[in-house]
Length: 337
Image 1 (tube, rainbow, N blue to C red):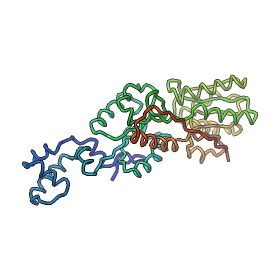
Image 2 (cartoon, rainbow, N blue to C red):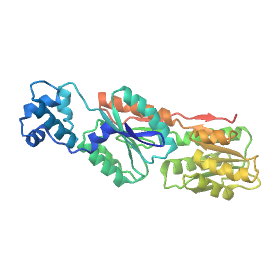
Image 3 (cartoon, helix red, strand yellow):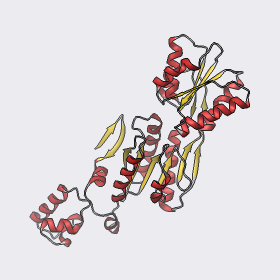
Image 4 (cartoon, helix red, strand yellow):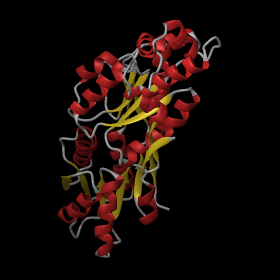
């Protein structure tokens, strides 16, 4: 059984017990049961030679305290708890859900029990998660990075952590090609003779979706002698809807949006005003945007492929701990049907 949110697996019951239970020892169970450690060990290993009433008493205490044998003890018997924590920034993030859905089959295939935690873009929440995960001796962490998350907090995990959507010098990372995505869209529009290209993005405090994508737009406008016209706000379709009016003029022929979510809002604004001649471009491979507005240009940033790459890098770290490898996921342009 698993707890779920928006059809995404968050954490299996067994993994939850593994993370949240008090780490009792066999000695503790023996003391609570009034027997020797060897008797407890035989019960745990399902060996014979224990009276039924004694076995029942020990099993009851084990269940009451959600006892799980230490990883080293289980490994000596050929049994291992293989747990990987996935720390997303938001449970409702379409981009991160695409990546997580791609991660899970690979983790299951390798015998790992994944657990899903949320940071909500709060470094302190990440710190709390890492403290709990350290006590539980998880095998690895897949973390979606964000602005303000300091590398020093993550360094103790450098041999068993892969960071997605962000890059730290000493940590293994898988990031998306923010600049490449904007470049694909700008080149496609310029090839179609567009000269009045606006941009609706995210505040520059977001260094990737915000800063990198806006900076690339601005640099390409300068390169191609296009007058930039941009508005920056939040990563929501409401923000896209509200900001659209700030960048649209009678000359505007195309609008690049920093995400498909923003593009949904911009497209709705244009649709309500029957401005169907303005080309809207997004980034993110959001199926809802393609379904509602099939004439939209969009760049697939490779979220699913990034998830698969992150798992592969984590498995590589398990076999040969050499952190610091940086991978950029290639992006592809999806033209309107």
